[in-house]
Amino acid sequence: MTSRWTRSGMWAGLITSALLFWASDSLAAEKLIWLVRDLPPLTMHDGPQKGRGIIDQLLPVLMANMPQYQHVIMRVNRARSMQMLEGSQLSCDPMLVWNPDRALRIAYSSPIIGLHSNGLVIRRQDQPLIAPFVHDESVDLLAMLNSQSVKLGIVAKRSYGTWIDDQLSHGPASQFFIHYGNDALGSLLQMQQAGRLQTLLGYWPEIQAKAKQHGLSSTALVFYPIQGAPPYQPIYVGCSKTPEGQHVIASINTVLGNLAHEPQTSPETFWIDPSQKAEDPVPDAPAP
Image (cartoon, rainbow, N blue to C red; front, side, top):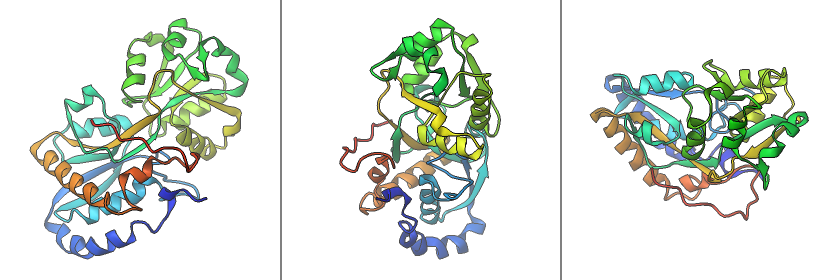
């Protein structure tokens, strides 16, 4: 069965209803910069699923229903996005994880979607390296880090969720390889393939897609949930924490509230993962 979030026509009516008004009024409107990057299944910049990610489909709906702004899409890496959100320009990131430190400097929308949480990936042949830290098919991340037996690849300035971020903050710095590049996860996967890095963190659909982009086999990789982490990770829109940014967030929440009345465009629809069984329960979205 085709996953509900991959239906390409789900947004057509909402976009068409507002697009003409938005186009005619946008030249005189305040500029709003949308900060995006390739992060399957949220955004897909390459391959046969190009443009069919969850945020790829949601972003035009938000823009069409916010004609008071001149919308500009900018591709940036995670580190650059965080820098811009904390700068003077009015900008928003439509695929942001909430954490307490970020909330001091960034205004957050209502939760819009959710994914299965980040986890640890290792080459199948290297599984014995983490065997002592695997319990009930989940990895004790902090115990693994404190053992100082394997290196962990992470993306600079990325939040992996409050629980995982806390585990990382207590691990020895010597065990991390932090990548700042525009294709940080892809580069980390290549390092792992070359044997220079044993483990890395990410969303499983994201890792599978990135491996394919780089000609790597995802079947040679094994994904482990992180022990203690919640099964789902809510995703938010985050904007500059300024009066202007707060106004944008209010508009976004209004649009999301209206979408919730459409059965195919409700935010809760996107809690369904493509690999998840249809009968699996859809969890409630946690509040920021």
